[in-house]
Length: 162
Image (cartoon, rainbow, N blue to C red):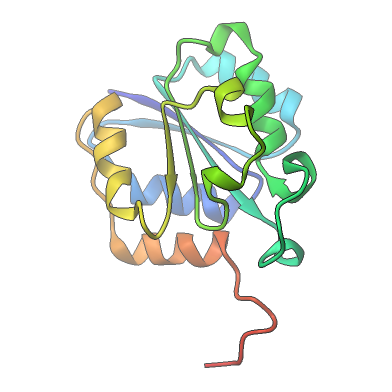
């Protein structure tokens, strides 16, 4: 049984991600909230894998990425996790629907050291294989994945209504 920590400040994202990553017998830690409290909870949980989605707030979608700690939700928590000695050996998977790794400042990913950075939709098919490589077979619903995508990448207000 794998212990997977899913960290995000949107409860719906955490719920959908855990549903998408259903793997037989896994225990999920679903946490949202203040970074210092979340990190203490993650350390106590002793996960086998940590998942963190990065995304831009609605106001930042379509704009150039400046300071990742201001423009990217999840970046501060990711930075704090990378500096937590008790979690140094825990595999970390970062993914995003709205932030590409080449948009992050030089050295940012090298400092936080994720084992994988997946950018969707291009890397969508890679999520379950990457997770399976760390904790065993993972499978998920494409319906849940679509709801997750919509949660992490809200429509651009400038786009016309369908």
